Image (cartoon, rainbow, N blue to C red; front, side, top):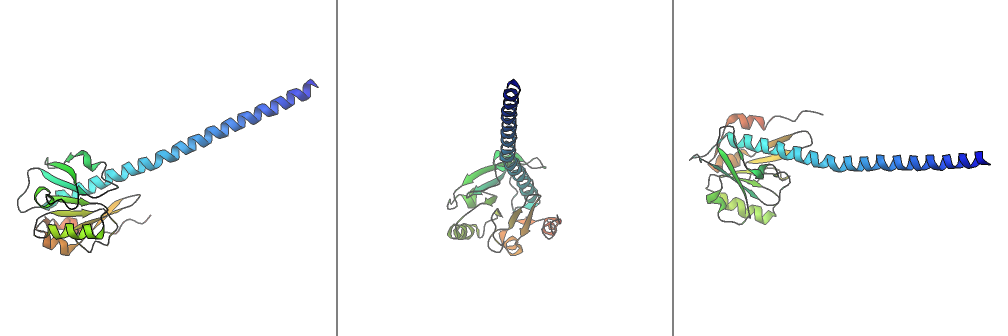
Length: 191
């Protein structure tokens, strides 16, 4: 009888150990899954910052600003790293701030705008206010880059690319180095 009690106790003990190990593994898996998207989101934000700073460094305004004023308009997904402010490779500081889409100060206090999610009416009003002002616009959204924005970002898991609206570039008053225009024509690498 002692043998059967010992065997039953051993089976129950093994079941508890297996259950504990399973819970420990599932907890580790859940924590790893919750941390992975955060790491990926941070990486995307850093990649977007690099692309935006690269675009800005190859742009020339009619009167070069001592400090580049970048305004973020609308809700965005990838500007966490950008809003910290930064300095271009040339040493010129980039001052970043958020403004509402209807803020009239955009045309006078922004050298560039980073556009997040806006309604079509907000986008139309924003682009109408920019006409005749040398303001570079970069759109984060999934639009076709056919209306308004000079640059439209394409954010993927592996890289950030962009499209250029040549018509908007020509009307903006901001000159863009031809190398940047050529980069926009490159196709992303196949996976």
